[in-house]
Image 1 (tube, rainbow, N blue to C red):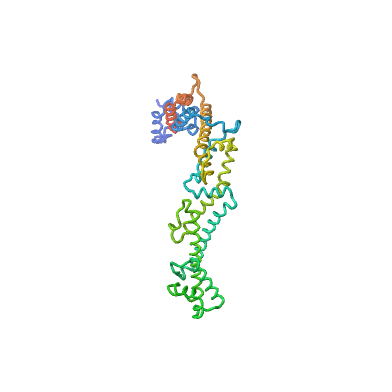
Image 2: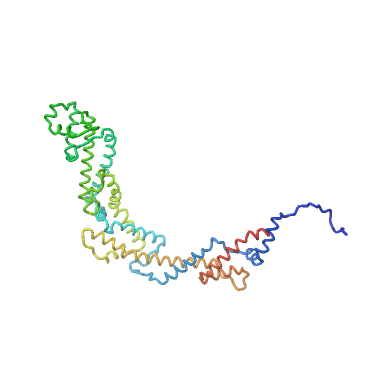
Length: 392
């Protein structure tokens, strides 16, 4: 009766699969249909080669909207046969032009004045360069004086003329350096020296030594430099809309240092910022001279630069935006052609999976809802690849 058994059977022979592996294998009978298995065994597109549904929807909507726009706005200002350029190039150009004309907005008249000076150069630049130099000088002198001021704590009379105090301190320091003394005779014959000694203090006492008078000289020199800087600022910058020096505290140079980079940027604006952008426009085939000649004159001392700023903001940027939109439409059309070429429609007699046919049809018909459905179905199908691998 048992003769068909080829040999003895071990009572404890191990199973080829563990119980958990058997459970997983049986589970695939439910999770994976025959249709799923056939689809996964065929050629399916990679998910990273497909646009996300929200991107597909956005591209279709943008392309349809652009088709409704006037994309040849002021086409007469573009040379025929000129290269269209790239969308990224135009996007960057628009952003750079928008930022570049900020100093020409008229919100800060001192910026307009500095840009004008930088454009014409030479003696026009000199007052601005001298102002920046003076700010840096005061900033450096203040730093150099700090150790002396902290060590000796020199004090000068508040209402006195800092220039006169510096002159007197210079005389006394020179006298002492030459070996002179500040005795009764010297003070009697130099009334200004005597008054200086009586009204100044070093470490809360009247000055006596050469180091004391050097400290007083350092303070007087710094105060005089700050006075000169404040006076120049109030004559040159405050009338052009900058805050007066009276609002900047005793250490005025620290506040004014914040303006130095902006002033230098304005001085270099025409050469470093504007001319490269103007050349980029010309290289793209834009008729800049014709465009500028069309712009109305703006009266006033800042009229030349205000005219340029308004020309860019009000007239040029819309023209460039129209060109950008034209390039963007061409880009989207090419992307759709390439996408449809990669996912050609399967013929009715094709053995391609239904999900693939659904995906291809949604792409070619540009049906956003159908594409989202097909994309999600493909994503779900691919999630079952592990179950198919388990079966194999």
